Image (tube, rainbow, N blue to C red; front, side):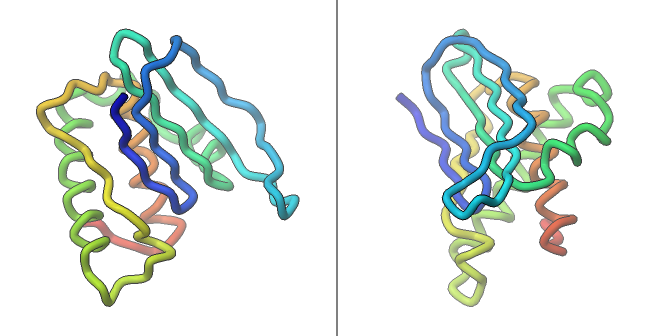
Length: 135
């Protein structure tokens, strides 16, 4: 079982499980705060991405659809974003609230377009919401 975790309000897990696509309207956490939960899983790829972030589902609905981007573009951007994000995780002067742990995005692994699309959009959302530039 492979894991690709990031827990801030993003929780990415790479797990072998049955194919599903779930986009509920939101759930309440222990503090009764409504959070969006988006899960994409694909058995043939053995990877799953879960994003828990208030406002992400709404943000995603305003973005170009998956077909707008090539898979190569998404992979390239995700590699760049994850490397910069990980650099910030290792920077002890950075907030652990924003950068709690590394994202182990491997350029040699084929995650599939759907996973790459969701991760790319999360990085875009993260930049906007937290006024961060991963560029």
